[in-house]
Image (spheres, rainbow, N blue to C red):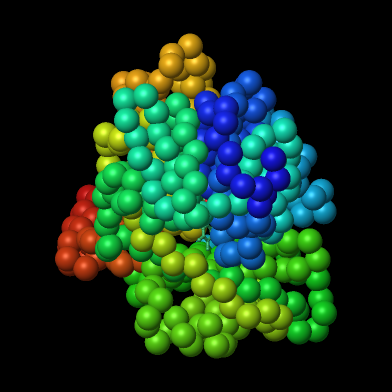
Length: 388
Ligand SMILES: Cc1cc2nc3c(=O)[nH]c(=O)nc-3n(C[C@H](O)[C@H](O)[C@H](O)COP(=O)(O)OP(=O)(O)OC[C@H]3O[C@@H](n4cnc5c(N)ncnc54)[C@H](O)[C@@H]3O)c2cc1C
């Protein structure tokens, strides 16, 4: 079935997937390969030019390769083999394999093409999901309904969850704000991929900047814990290069003069996670399950881990007429999944605490304990010199 066809739920699929973005597309393809009858619903014909992940990290490429899908998304000229990291004036050069710059919309649309083949895929907005002991039903905005033994919500944003009886924990204090824009060297000189850590993270609330190629373009991502409505956010969006050098004063030594060649895109995320237990027959994966800070580079890893773990558990559900609640709990409690979720949240908290001067070192510095500890250490060293 092609996008835009009327919704048909006859015969009922095993699995209804709501959302055909990164997670929904990969899941649909893998379910089909495992012999499950699936029906995927997404409200957009094509994934739009939205600001999401612009890199495929090595662990993510490796999982996609394991799924047999890496060749669908990785143009060979975008590989990031060598990346310099600048930290307090020092440079460390790292070498990578399977590390790519990507256009998210192109990547998702390529995965979608691969997933649509031989599956039911319909363009429809889902308004809510209802469930009972035997399965779950996705209700679309135009009044259609698709029922399956299991409904997987892969809608990216958590807005659909409240209408579907899925409760969410939120932390409005844990936020991230990312800028993205293309640049070129003012003198036309070649650029090099790098990461540049904040020189004063406790003061400017910035984490790091990263410059990398995507196709012919050079792309900056700048990660902060600013909020969308403050003046410094608006100023950065208006004058990205000037503000970049204000934030990272020594960066100019490495890049030379730069020119922005596109408008600045801004991505804002706030921490949330699905609270268990969820309704019968409903599973939430990817960003809809738990948001990520882009600075951690863990969003796609979490999507792929969710899919990997879900597929493992699904094989055990196959012979049942419905998916028991205990089986869904087993998915949510799987150690591989919980470790990936926790790693991602811990990374976010770490960046946030550093940016707000709440790292252990910054705690000590602020409380005066750092100076006191230094003085004691100095007195100790002086005493040692005197006695030797
Ligand atoms: C600025 C930014 C930078 C990032 N950088 C990185 C990075 O460097 N590395 C990394 O790993 N992660 C990064 N992330 C996180 C990563 O992009 C996300 O975790 C990932 O894109 C989530 O994929 P998903 O499939 O859950 O959602 P999406 O890919 O957004 O898919 C959701 C799909 O659901 C559909 N949908 C939504 N609602 C409905 C509905 N009601 N009915 C039908 N369809 C619906 C949408 O049309 C869409 O196709 C970044 C995120 C942002 C915002």
